[in-house]
Length: 242
Image (tube, rainbow, N blue to C red):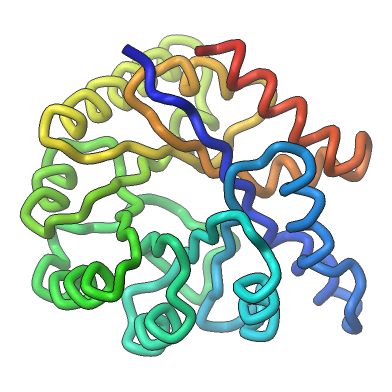
């Protein structure tokens, strides 16, 4: 039985374009409103430690004005924990973060960082924030999520997205098996990273996945077809896959 499939749109790279020139244009808040009008189910933002795209003021505005659920991607640091507890977004997705990386390069080592993550997961959960862990589709990481009592995992789809042929098929099987293992243990599965119009449907067709979070590609396509059409097209492709 397939779960309803939600689309969370990451608007970070609207802020990346703004920050390249300075000033206030283009405004991530305007993008969030477009996503809302186009049928997106949520807004995802990654407030990085170096504030390279989304700023604290963006998060503040989005939390006050947007009616859609907000998913805050955050590093496992005390600073980000305090920000999450202050704003209380609908969800907080704990992700790995390195200052020198251009984008998230892989999944969180939830197994290796159990003692560091456990109090964060507890505090976020006690504040009523849905916690997710951004992990590789790997049994060891799922077992760690179970021990941490995280209600959600988001599987990193980068290896799938950046491979082809037999390698991509093998990665799709790995994701499918990981989603099944998570579901068996009562954990909700999300997925994201590198998903496009061309490769999203096999991932969207995995019946237990409840949410896809997609950003960079949709913002890039918006240059050519507009953000509203970009979101609508992705939404349609996801629905057809189900």
